[in-house]
Length: 357
Image 1: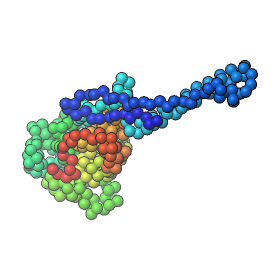
Image 2 (image 1 turned 120 degrees about the vertical axis):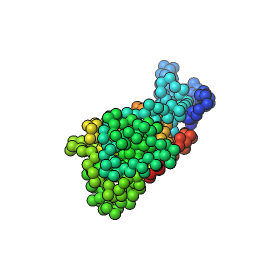
Image 3 (image 1 turned 90 degrees about the vertical axis):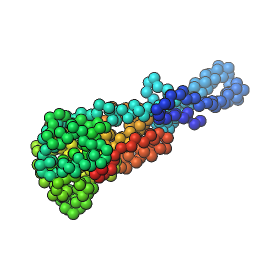
Image 4 (image 1 turned 60 degrees about the horizontal axis):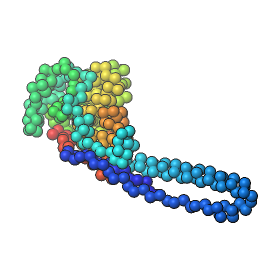
């Protein structure tokens, strides 16, 4: 008998949860055991007949229990590949996913506050020619998102406030930290040149695509000490960057061949230089990625809720930004699973290009 099918659907704005109708359950009758049959099997005295009846009844009970257990396990195994375990108090036939609530989890309205401060990083970028002020201001004006007074001050004067990423400044931080990752000296960038050569590195989207500097990209690449890291801080940085992936090109942050990778490297370098722990850097990567890739992160959040009944806010950041979920291949598998189960969300939009926008 096929197990009852569970239902999972995304609740869009305006929808109301409905109580699904449980599928009909059909019971297969078990063969009866008539006394005549038992007498044929046991043509002996009355006491032996009674004993045989008791034994048959016990055997029937054991068979029924074994069958019920096997059926239950089979149904559970099938259901676990399609729908999540249902939390206590929820309808066992359905899990309703509120897209608005999930969006608020991945992109909290108040943003996510990092442990690091900007300091004088903005003025240093201008001083070494990593950012050309006019070009930087112009690209945001053309995009219809002119720099706010706060963002302009971070760039020109610096700031002792902690870095906060939210929906209003994620685009600003992407290009700001792209310049940091590209320009700051770090052994991670040395290893890229050793492996691919200057010519190979210069063809990366994260190098050749940088057009907001006062100098050519490869004149900036790995040239300036914007952030100094101790050996311990570098070790913590490297313990993180190889495990923070991005779905645009599938690579981790130790291979920053696109703007998102280079920007994440710069951001994590800033955090490491100010003493951030490995856990703090992973949590920051989880939410910064969520603001830079809101559509992909929303699908990950739906997958976690539907397959594990796990809220995004409680998900281990190492898993969320790791290869299984946030590499190009890992995310593709999640997307296909959601499509197969009719759980794809409404599009959020947003900027996710790997170049200056």
